[in-house]
Image 1 (spheres, helix red, strand yellow):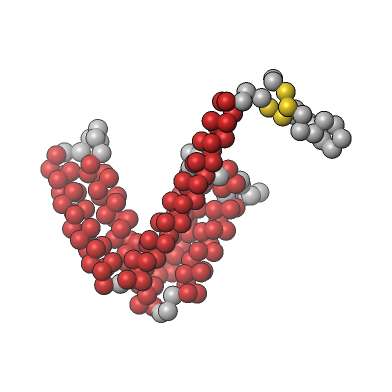
Image 2 (cartoon, rainbow, N blue to C red; image 1 turned 60 degrees about the vertical axis):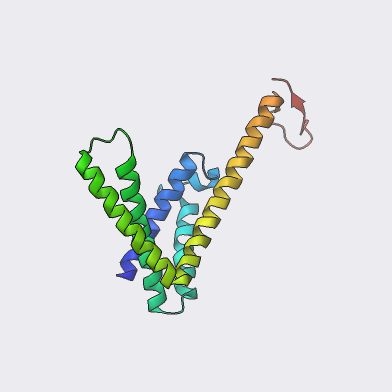
Length: 171
């Protein structure tokens, strides 16, 4: 079961990181594809993280806790977001049932977090690092866009060594 979960996590993480880069939420390096059309940086990250987790986890029970808090959290977020989105063609009763299930799953998630502190710390670290990378890149991108709007200049294209490298034009 845990091997299947790791496989699912790797595939999902590759797609997630690539999609975030496509949307401009992560640096462009996450969009680079290898010769087979696979985003290679997300693949390395997606394989390295589970290996690191498997290596650092103290035992099978700890791995099961990480799996449980992740799955329950993902289901909770999915149910909550689906039941609260406006314009989704779902019957009112279905939305209420999904919201009630989301609340139940949230209570289960809180129970896991309270009883398995290492799993909670793992979630906080993973989410914190991910959000930090995302926000750092977004602020950098916004700062560059703002800087470009203030100074409508660009470096000469094709400039190389001894050919006016660093010359700025108003074009």
